[in-house]
Length: 160
Ligand SMILES: Nc1nc2c(c(=O)[nH]1)N=C([C@H](O)[C@H](O)COP(=O)(O)OP(=O)(O)OP(=O)(O)O)CN2
Ligand SMILES: [Zn+2]
Image 1 (cartoon, rainbow, N blue to C red):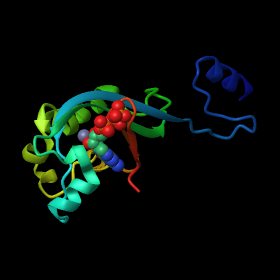
Image 2: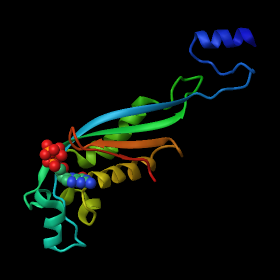
Image 3: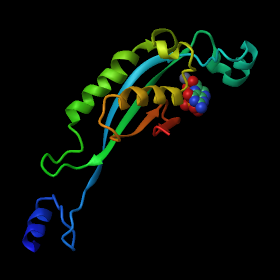
């Protein structure tokens, strides 16, 4: 068993600890994607006056745009046979389907039905991405959706 531990450590695949008990290695895998979209912050449940007061310049009817940087992170066991938490090729396809196809080069409020009655804050964009991503992944694999709305404004959603 000691020999097995030495060999498995050497190959970076240690699955027994010093008491010869099986160890599960947990990894975090992130896919980063950038999309461009326009939006306006406006809540249908608030008056025009209150909208202006709360959202200020972001309530301008002409809207404005961002290059959003999205980071989708999965967390799971590093499979000792494949060496992967999940195949990046699959994660890449899910991000393409959930983020790029519906959101890239879109007016979030007008082109994405979800935001017809949900304010398109970055928090809600993160919730949108989470809710659609979580449906496609094995249970408990999705860990975090992080969005950089600008270099200075970052939001994290973990499904809570
Ligand atoms: N909680 C939130 N607050 C705000 C959001 C949001 O998504 N969640 N969004 C906005 C505006 O849409 C806008 O994106 C903010 O832009 P701006 O203030 O111009 O961005 P910066 O902070 O990067 O600009 P600087 O003036 O350079 O600091 C507002 N609030
Ligand atoms: Zn904005």
